[in-house]
Each structure stands twice: as C-alpha cells, then as structure tokens.
Amino acid sequence: MTAVVEASPTLTRRDFVFDHVALLVFPDAVDDVSTFLQKRQVEVADPIESVVVRSRLAQRYGVNEQSLEVTILYGRLPEPAQAGVEVFILPSGSAVAAHSDMPARERATEAERHEAWLVDGASLAEVRRVCLDRLGMTPDGGGFNPHEGKSSGGRTVLYFHLPTHLAGEPRRLELKADGHWPDVLAAHKAAGAGAQEPYRQLLGLLAGHWAARAVHVATELNLNEHLRDGPRTVGQLAQRLNCDEKAVARLLRYLSGAGIVREVGDSRYLNTPAGDLLCADNPFADLVKIYGGEFYDAWGEFPTALRTGGTAFRHRFGAEHFDHFAAHSDSAQVFDRAMQSITSVIAVDLAKTYDFAPGSRIVDIGGGNGTLLRTLLRSHETVHGTVFDREHVVGKTPADPELGDRLQHVPGDFFAEVPSGADVYVLSRVLHDWNDDDCVRILSSCRRACGPDATLLVLERLLPDEWSTPGSGELAALWDLQMLAITGGQERDLEHYERLLRTAGFRLAELRTLGVDMNLIVAESA
Image (cartoon, rainbow, N blue to C red):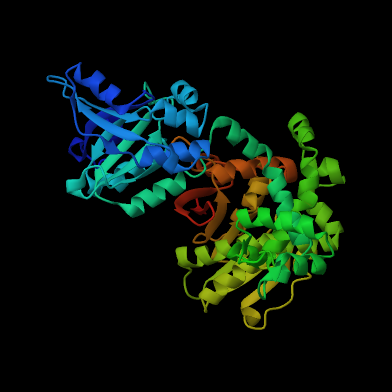
C-alpha cells in the first residue's frame, strides 16, 4: 500500500497493516481444507460463517444466499513469515447444486482471490477515497460481517479491482476495518453498482439507445403528465394515451426499473421526482424531445462526421443546427426550453458560487431566453443585466415584470461585437459549440468590449488532463461526441481553454467547480 501513502499526505503506514491473501476453494468438506493447512504448519482458527462472499456469489449467479454454505478459515503462517491466509470454502456439492458452472467459472476467473489490509476505522473513508480518486481502483462490492472480529463489533470490508498499472497478482484488494462503518460501506457499494462483467458492460452500452428512446416516447405521449396528480392503473393510463394496454404495461415496467415511475400496488403507477421532470410544463421534457428528435435523427449520420469532420446534423438536415432552428420556429422553441433545463441548475450554482458586486452590470452572451441571467438578478437585487443573443431568440422572449428595467434583451452577432461597458461577461456553454478559430473570434469580441477591470466567466465541462482524478470528465467526453455530431464544436481540457483565452487577450485567474460536471473559468484582461 505504498502507493496509497504516496497519494495522500494525510496517511501513514501506521494507518493500515497487511493482513492476508485469500482464495475461494471447492473441496468435498471443510475439514479437508483445515487438515491440508495444518499439515503445512499453518495455525488455523475456528471456521466462521461468510457473509460478504456468500452474498457476492449469490448475486453473481442469481441464486438464493441460503443455498450457499460458505465458510471462512483463517490461518497464520509460521515465523518468520507470519503472513495470513483466508480461505473461503464452498463444498463442491453445494456449489454445483446451486449453479452447475460455479466451480469451473470461479476457478477460471479467480474473482474472490485478493490480498487484504487491515485499516484503522477512522481512516477507512480516507484510504477508500485515495484508492478510488488517486489510484484509479474500481469498487468491487463489500459488506459487514458480524461473525468476524466479534470483540471489535464485527468488521467492515471493502473490495477493489486494481488498474493494470498497479496490479500484479492478485488483481483485487480488500480493505478491512474493525467495527461497523455503514456510511462508508453504503457509498462504496453504490459506487460499485455499475461494475459489470465485460460482456454485460458491452450489452448495456449497446442497449443505451433503447433506454433513451423509451423515455423519449413516454415524453412524446405525455405519459408522466397523466401521473402527476396521483396513481393510475395500467388500464386507465392506456386509455388516456390511446395505446395498447399490454404494451403500456411493458413500458411502465421498464420505466419503473429506470426510476421514472414507481408502482404503488395493484398495477398502479405514480411519478418519481425524475418522472416529474418529464411533465409538459418542465423544460426537461423539451430536453428529452430535442435529444430524441432532431439530435437523435442526426446521430444516424454519425459515420459521416467521423469521415469528414463535418457535422452529422448538417448532413441530415442540410444546415447547421443554429441555422436550422432559426428557420424552424417550433423546433427553436423546443430547443430554447431544452437548454433552459440544465441552465436553471447551473444558474443556481453560479449565483451561490460567484460574488457579483452590488450595482454591477452583467452581459450574458448567447444567453438564450435569459434563464441564467434572471436567476442571477433575483439572487443579487442591485445587479443589472443584458441578455445578448440572435434576433430570433431575444425577439420572442417576453419581458419580466418582476425585474423590470434591470433586465434587457439585446439582439446581435457575438462574432462581430458584444455590448461594451459591463463589469462581468458570461459565456455559459457557448464555446463548446464552436471550433477553435470561432472561439477566438467570440473571445476577441468580448475582449474588445471589456474595460480594464471587467471579468469574463466561462462555464464549460472540462475534459480530463494529467492532473485530473480518475473517472472525472466522463460527461465531458460523452458530450464531446455530441459536439462532433451536432454542432461542429468540441469539449476541451483546461489547458486548451487557457490557450484560447490567452490568444484573445485574457488570462486565467481562477477555476471553480459547479454541479452537473460544470466548471467556472474566471478570466481577466491580460
């Protein structure tokens, strides 16, 4: 565990000690293993009942836990080694009766083979964090065994799968801590819920568009709208949707497992909080519609984007997506409301994260229908602001009586110029829509408008770089493909954005994190 110490200055080798190596065997009887170990001068403790490995095996093979008679034998090698050995024992008859392939598959995969370290309970959360965030280990289940370490109140165990650059043999690690640490255990098991065997992982990826399409169709039918006022039976819902009752039942079964609706008994269903987002008056419903509509259709031409570097959207619709929406008002309205969904989440975060000076003026460049700026102005009562966007966007945005003249809407082209004289300029999810040359043009327009004390706030997701923790930037990597398919832009890492800012006459001043994987890049005039 030297790597853990090196990755965290708050931990020392005193926080954990090597405990044992472990494996799973399938003998005829438990006594066979005990006898085998004792003949080799291994000091063997009394067998105890397995809880965690039994549960893992039951889950892996889809069998009842009670059908598996898993026992643990602990042994200690004689001096000078004094190393420990942990043997999980499942008699072959019991294993085959539960699942005929279990012994052969477990011997081939060695899924329970690992090395274990005993960790001080107070340091368990920190050691776990370092293993995941700094060393790139993958959660691989865990549990609490009240039969182990009874004098200490049982033991909490966490399993990890090691990345290639750390792993020798075995490839799995166990952390053990005396006592019951339910919060740490719950977080670990939740983080590992998505860990799958490779073929299941691949099948899950391939089926991803089915899930998206199911949610999209449910939204197009206004399914969740009919469940917002209380539970309805499958028959009642099918009648309201004018759909086949059996088909609706199958869709509801999937949506229930996906957390969009929940069954409340007697084949009656009700919205979950996620389902409420899909009601007709919520902009998230429009987000689903646009991603399941034009964007979904455009992805059918994704091979063209890969071959040419141009957008799949243009190949499908004959125009880039901003020009397409400018010419199709109904689609434009859905698109604007769709962008409002995530913007509303980001805006609340930004209002809390950045301190806008009293009396300052903000220009939200490419601000759409003004969702972000309205949130900022309501949170800062002396601040004024201007939404700056294309004519077809701001020209159809109604005035806000509550904000009055504190909020203005100004049409224009941010490639040419933006309103000057403001204290803060905001580019929220604008730059990722454009290539590098266009980004420099936009940023240069901002620089010309900025006074010497003005600040530029750029809100974007960041691709991971060499300083990023493992697993970060996952949404950015996914959205990078969306930009390739739809807008012709791209997601970038921080160094890339810093280069663009520097080229346009800005310098990076600060970086802050926001929700939904967003980042706030604070820039000032160079």
